[in-house]
Each structure stands twice: as C-alpha cells, then as structure tokens.
Length: 247
Figure 1 (cartoon, rainbow, N blue to C red):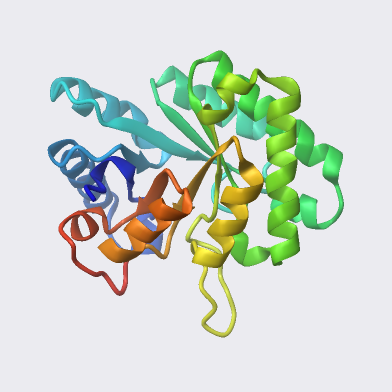
Figure 2: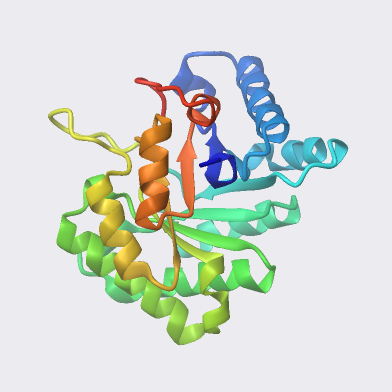
C-alpha cells in the first residue's frame, strides 16, 4: 500500500518546546513543507503563524500538497470566539484544513451545550469557506465511554446542522500529541481508540494523530477505516521504516 496520500506530515513544537532558536524552528518548518511537497504527502501540518509561508512554498512548487494548522492548540480551553478568530486568520492566510482542539475539559465537566456550540460554529466557519474541519478530542484525557460520547456529539452536531454530503469534510481526530500522561500511557492514537472513533463518527472521517511511527501500523490504521494519519515520521513511514521517538 502506498501510504503517502494518507499522511499529514506534522511539526508543531515551539522553539521553547524543542529547545532551539526561532530561526531553527523556521528552518524545521520549511524542511517539513519541502519534504511534504517532494514526497506528495497529503498535507503539511504546521502552527498558524507559518500558514502564509507554507502557502507561498506550495504555490511556488505548483504542488497539490495541502496546508493544515491547529486551532486552540494544545489545551483546547480557549473560548469559542478566540478559536474562531484564530481560525479566520488561518483562512485569510489561505489554509486548507483547520484542526480544532475541542474543549474536552468542558465536555468532561458536563458543559455539553458549550461544546456543541463550539463544534457548530467552528465547523460552520470551515465549511462556509470550503475548508476541512477536524476536531481533536484528546483521547488520552478520556475514558473509552467518553471517546464514544464526544465522537457521537461531533457527528450529531454536523449531521443535524449541515448537509450529509459535507460529512467527509469533517473529521474526528484522536490527539494533539502534547497531552502529558502518567505512568507511560500513550498520548497518541491507539488501535482501540481509533476503532471507537471510526465506528461512532460515521459518516464523518477519522484521523489518527500521534503514535503511528511505522509503515505496518499506518497500514493497519487505514484498514481500520482511518483516512488521515498525523505524524512527524512521515518519511520513515513512507519508506517502510520505524521511528521510536517521533510524534
């Protein structure tokens, strides 16, 4: 299986998080975008402030590689209005896909109407501008029952408010890759969680993010029904290799 077209090649660390300079961060982002273009990955996923640079590079290369960015990253606790402002700026910079971190903390606290409104408004902004919306639910912060319920919530908001033909433009995505777990627990996509997401998101799409670091696991995710894989190990995966440290 050629997995390149399933891969969202990702670099989201800030300079502080990576313990490098801002200049080195810019270089890493540009390297990732060039690699995505050269290998025909589906998408390059970068922080919002790099969207305009990414668009310029993709246009110059006459490439079909898409550009994605994260919204409300990584905690998801920003207000809906703050997320919409951030998303609109990315749209103005000509992004293709918006990966919102859902307010999973509010969900766990039972503030369901807040979460429903966020999903509605964020999805509407994306679809009105012909952009893909992905909702990151942060599975490492949730129980299996909560994974099912929040996935169903996203699905139901989309199907109740937007035409079903738009369903493939909306994803439920597993993880940010930045959630701090205890006891060595995985903080990215697992096969168990992705099965739950795929089954309960239908007809919405599913994205496995974090934790997929080799070709065999990528293929297995696709076979489960995942249509996108977010990874910082895109090149190794595409070449059939294995990365023990990447996102």
